[in-house]
Image (cartoon, rainbow, N blue to C red; front, side, top):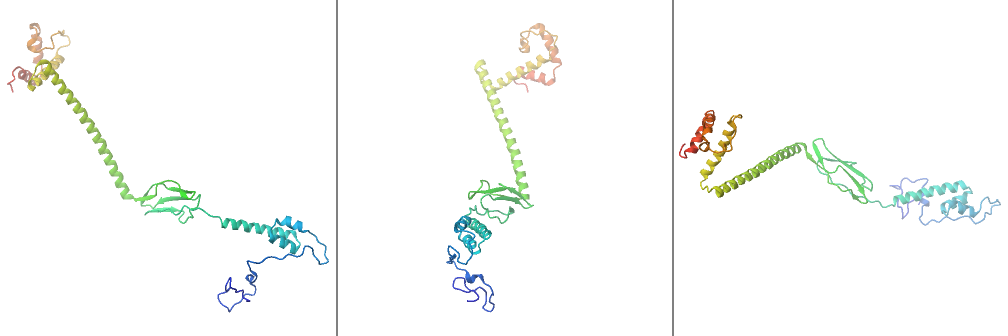
Length: 281
């Protein structure tokens, strides 16, 4: 047909009213094979090139050989050869199979950059959050060999919830530290109590003391002896038997000890009387 319609390409225009004056599709055929001139030109003209030159120049490309032979100009053949090589390069690039890592999922509040990437090998994606959110996870991922680089999925948390969780974490941490100190103190207290019980048991086994009240009285006597010893005048010479009770002192030291007891507080005298008389309150 004049408008170029055929069974392979269909109608050129949308209607039959308008017909193109020039339609290159009229001569488009996938089975077309160029027909070259004979090996020699019988046009009463001298040949300015040989077929060996054409083959060497065009490197076996039929389109270049055809233009070179028909025009007789080497420049035209080289131009056709260059365009044909560009076409082959584009065809190879277009038919190359690309590896994609696939889209990355995102949650509420996450902003992905670039928003509409191809996610091909070597591409990187950066994540961020909207102003009212805090970001968590890895903020950048890279596509390598069909898989994304290792990392946590990016997600955002509301600012108010983030602050509440931080305060809660701080309070729980402080509470945990206090509990550790309390437990440590309780352990030391139990160790001290055990040592006191062991000491009391040794006193029972050594002195034959059977009453707990007597044990307490013995401890109180020992404490009062130390207090009286600290109140003795430093110029007073110490004797080897100064660590005993008041009744066990020699006669020449009783006056000095009595003077020392006179300066003691009243509660020390009451304690001394209670030790002397167990029924004293």
